Structures are given as structure tokens and as C-alpha cells.
Image (cartoon, rainbow, N blue to C red; front, side, top):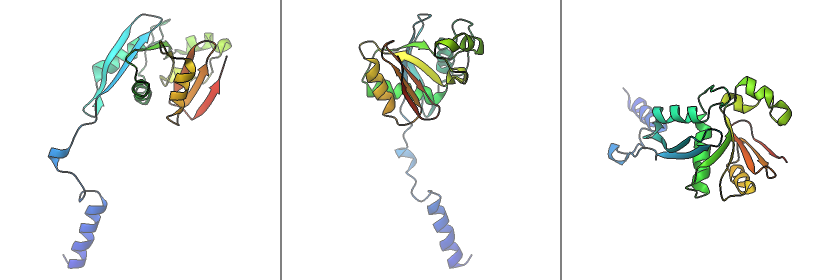
Amino acid sequence: MSRRGLLGLGAAVVAMGVGGARPAAAWEPEPERVVRLYNCQTGEIFDGVYWAEGRPVAEALARIDWILRDHSSDDCRRIDLALLHRLSAMQEKLESERPFEVLSAFRSLETNRRLLGQGASVTSLHLEGKAVDLRLPGRRASDLYKCALSFGSGGAGCYPGRGFVHVDTGPTRRWVGA
């Protein structure tokens, strides 16, 4: 290989990030992520690590999926990891050791249809496991709403009269209801 070819190869390696890589001993896994949830409908609790060493903890996710199921039908769906990350980050930002009180998370199509006259949407992200309605004891709904807004993405709705917020991982939207 010519000197010019060797220099080009070296530049390509650096551009790919290999030249700036840290030694293996300096590698640290992503921190554990914890979430604390209390299902108001069933009384079930999850308070623990759902993400460790850079990956989801399968047993924890299965437990969370069950706790956040549609309690009227026991239908269960995988809850969006981005939503769990958001909830974990909100608890950390709010410096809360208390669990979020979950009013609604995953909803089956049948349950969502029953709720259409009560503010539910035909295209609700609850149907996809990407939304949760919650409150936090000792905190106003407006405080949770401001915290949710601080992330800049996803949907956030505040229902101060009913004392809860909606958080989702869909398109960026904001609203205040009754």
C-alpha cells in the first residue's frame, strides 16, 4: 500500500471513531435506571431497576407490563422503554422516592372505546403502551406537568381539576384540560 493510501486509511479509522476510543478499562456501563409505580386500580407496585448494564432487565419489564395492563380486561402490552425512561428521569428530577400513582397506562381497544366520551382519543397512545396518566403524592399536577414539559419532546397534558397529568412518547404536544 502506498503512503497516501495508508494515510487515507488512517484518516478513515479516525473518522470512524476508532482512533478516539477509550481503553477497555475506562469503559463504564450506563447507570441503572429505576422506576417506582403504584397502580391505583389494582394496588400493585413496582419499585426497582428495569435497566442495568446498558440493557433492559427482562423480568422487570414483564412485571411492569403486567402492572400497567388494562385492569378491566387483563390485556397486557409491552410498555414503551422511552416512556419508562421518561418516568424514571421525572422521578429523579423531582427528587421523589415515592411511586407515581398510575391511573391509566395501556388500554385495550374495548376499554378505550368506552372512554371516548370521557376525553379518550380514538388514536390514543395508551393503545400502544406509549402513554400514562399519573399523579405523585405531595406534588401538584402543575409541578408534574412542568417537569414533563422540561424534556421538550413527547406529549404532556395537565388536568389540574382532576389532579393528574398525561405523559406520552408521541409527537410533541401540550394541553391543559379540566
